[in-house]
Length: 487
Image 1 (tube, rainbow, N blue to C red):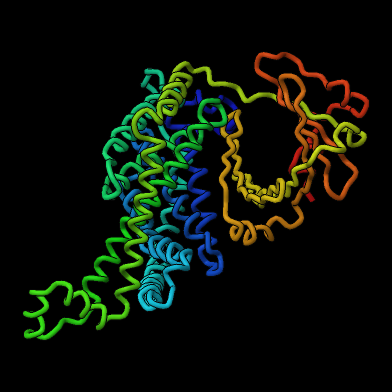
Image 2: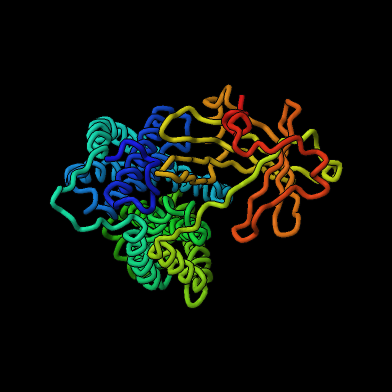
C-alpha cells in the first residue's frame, strides 16, 4: 500500500487501495464510539456505536472482493455478532422513548398498563446492555487489532498486467446496482403492515447511503441524495419500530389476563362482550395496553402516509435521476473538483453589515490524528441545532461528513474540545452570482471574509462595499484556518 496517501487522486486509485482507506477510517470511527459506551450517562452512545458498526459492515460487504486477503469470513462473523448484540438494547431504548413522549398514555385509567410495560422494558434493557458489553469486550477489541493491521496491506501478482479498475468506476456500478435494489424494496412496501418489507427497504437505503458518503465531497450531485436517504431511513425506521412494538404489545395483551375457571369459560365463550368485560375487570393493565396498541397503529398509519407521499409513484423521480447522474459522473472519471475558496483578513466589520442579523456559531475540535472531528452549535433566529463534522484525508482530497446530533451528545462531548474552540458571528451577503461569508471571531478583534469561486465564473474579487476593509488575502496562510484559530 502506498505510504503517501496524497500521491494519487482518491477516486482514481485502484479499488483495493481506496476501499482499504475508507475501511480503516470507518474502523477508527467504531472504536471511537465504543469508548463512549462506558459512560452510562451518554444516552446517544449506543445509537452512535450502532451506526458506526453498520457503516463498517456495509462497506466490508459491498467491497468484499477487493478486500480479500484483509477481511476474512470469520472477521465478518465477529462483526455481525457485535452488531446483533446492539439490536435488543436499541429496540428497548426506542420503545421507551416512544412511550415516554406520549403523556396521554399515562392518564389515570391507562397508567397501570404503561407503567407495567415500562418496567418490563427496563428489565430487558439491563440484560441486553450487559450482553452487549460482554460481546464488545470479547469480540470487537481483538477484531479491531486484526483488521487495523491487515487493512494496511494488500498484494498483487507482479505478472498481472491487467489494469486495475479505478475506485470511481467500480463505485459507479455499485451505486447503480444498489439503487435498483432499493427501488425494488420500496415497491414491496404497500401498507403499514409490511413490517419486514419496510425493514428490508430501510437496510437497502442504508447501503446506498454508506456507499455514497465517501464520494459525496467530490460529486456535486451526491449530497442531496444523502439528505433524501437519511429522511427515508427515519420514516421507515419509525414504521418498523412501531410494527415491532405493536407485536410485542399485542402479545402482552393476549397473555395479560388470568384464565377464568372452566364453568366461567363456557359462559364467557358464548358471550364475547362479557369475556372482554371479565378481562378488563381482572387485569387493570389491559386498558392501558390497548390504548398503547391503538396509538402504535395510528403511528404506523402516519409513517406509511409520509413514506407513500414521498417515495411511491412519481414522487421520487428526481431522486432516481440524481442517482444515475452520480453514477454517470463517476463512470466518466472526471468528478467535480471541490470549488476553491478565497479568504481575506479585514480591518473590521464593513458598515454595510452592521444591520444584518448574524448567525452564532460555536465549534470545538476533538483530539485525533487520522480522524479530524469537530462539534458545531449553530444558533439562528432563536433556534439552535447541533452537528458533528468528520474530515479525513483521502488521497489528494479531503472527505467531510456532517451529521446532526442530539443536544445531549453535544453536551457530553463538548468538554473534550477544551482549548480547541472557536466562536464566531457569521453573516451571509449575496453579491451577484456569489455569496460572501463574513465572520466576526468572538473574543478577539478579527474579521474574516470568504467566498466560494464559481466553477465557471473565473476570478472573484471583493465587491466595492468590502474592498476598503480588506487588509490582505490569507487563503493559503495556515494561521487563518479554523483549527489554528481555535483556542
